Amino acid sequence: MANLRTDDKRQQYARVFGHFDEDKDGKISSSELCRCVRSIGGDLTLEEAEAAVEMLDRDEDGLLGMEDFVAFVEGGDGEERQKELRMAFEMYGEEGGERRITPRSLKRMLSRLGEKRSVGECEVMISKFDLDGNGVLDFEEFSVMMS
Image (cartoon, rainbow, N blue to C red):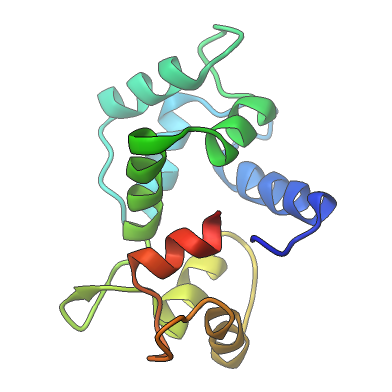
């Protein structure tokens, strides 16, 4: 995402936001957040989702709007940002006993977000940030990609 223009980023954010916003009301509820995280293999209780929405909800309507979502994705610093990145990284699943993003796990995640890519396209995407040349992304490489 580091090399994307601002408009491209906004479009990607809107696509992901739309995936979370199941009822298409322009807001993400805690139950929608919980269901979406679970659908991509994450482990999030309703109570945790409610706490996340409460923390991120700037207009205090109990829901996350697009701006709240963008602030969450782009915002944070230091320890909180690392925690958010770690959660995002872990959504890709475990491959070969290690947490890493492979072309197949990237394809699977993008598919869940409504974006169809081939394994070959995912290999190219990974290669741009694969600093050690092993064909997969570890957490440090993922962090560079997301900065």
